[in-house]
Image 1: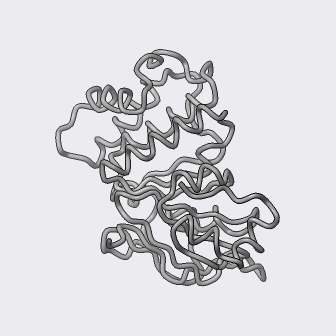
Image 2: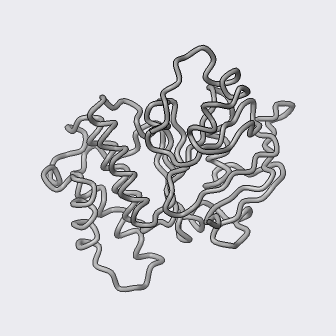
Length: 247
């Protein structure tokens, strides 16, 4: 399978600190790809490079066959890259429906296909299971439901690739499984997903492919089973923790 999104030898330096070193990863449509590593490994920095929030010191970012290294975040979003953040980013004083509608209306600034934002909103609400709470203010909803609103809002831009930063953060066990189930459904429809996550059970049960980052360097890539069996990964990231078997 060819990659819809890839980085090539990305380097990011902050003064004398090299946060990312020669990092090359790939995201394929129809697959959940994980980016894991200990705190401070450079995961969020690499995410920021991919979305255009951080300029790389060296290296390139490619999307859909095009070099997008010098394109700003708005242009990347227009091309089909959407992102959620570790810290929940929603409009708490707006309803779930209004949150999604804001994104659908913004999409009209570049998408001239004549789509109906309200129809898009209804379809996404149903897809992510939010129809029953569509008129509730997001600030009154549980964290797990609010995270679904954030994800739904990202989907309203009609992305080809979705980047998720800690999607299970703050979720209970049931909500985490609901999130995993939704991601599986989205990739079955052809979406490419790249996620950063510390919940190893979630990663091993959801991702089909994983990149492991340690001190800014990719130290391993492969299936969950291959990554779990990698001694360098066990030493650098998993340590003495019990490793959840890949499903």
